[in-house]
Image (cartoon, rainbow, N blue to C red; front, side, top):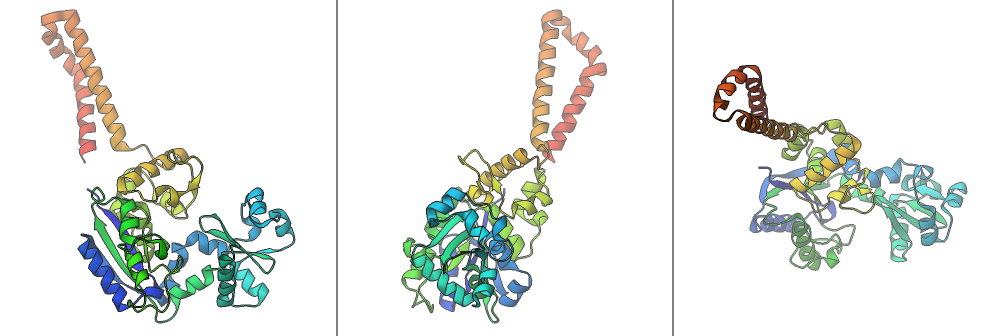
Length: 367
């Protein structure tokens, strides 16, 4: 049985002895099994670009993707900013965070101050997961908050303190884990019994320099069983083949190449959503088996998996059993009590090979 697992880390802005001890105590008190814990230095985070991979879409849009390559609905941009997206592109008014710093001759912290003010004024719009745009000084800047966010993880002397926890999601569903244990992404809106809510309410007692907010929200926790695997691969240099969740995916025919593509959070269409959504969003709040169901659905749609050999084997056995039963019933109706004589004659010609196939299929399933 695969237990549910989550990757939790305390963000650098909240890394105090008081916070670490409180989180450890609460995880133990709430019956989580801490299977691994440790610290990762900022230098290592920077070297292996862990934070860039963790916030992949945000980082990519802030530093690599050029504005003309963004797919934004013209009507939505117009309704939010009262300007044409095409015109803004043509006039060179759209830039990512890295380009904005160069064009405006400011550093990441200067851009962050402008971004924060724009957010307070309601001039920041989130268009997609990992894609926000702010109107600043008659420019439209993409993900201007990311550069300072990244810097907070990679400065010399900074550490990321992490915990890998396991629990039974039949007793504590993922949604309750995220809301009741971890707390709302905005700590000021979180339940006071949650980790984020409790720390935010007494932030000075926990040795923090500033009150937590929606960006500096104390800690991170995996939002699904799938996300937990991806995060362990990134932060702990794990392997798909040795991860319990990864093993289940590989066993079902999903390749590592497909998993690497999925880690980039593509848009997918699933039955539970009325419109295409990002993969991580489609899986949010789902346990191991729920995530596997959705991922198999996505894989079938994209032709990214072989048919599950165990499931197909079971179908073959059922069909073979029905065929044999129907055949014997027909013989009994035709020959009555003499059917055992005909059976003895036929078994060397056809029935024995059938049973042999069924035996091999049974062995295949039980492996």
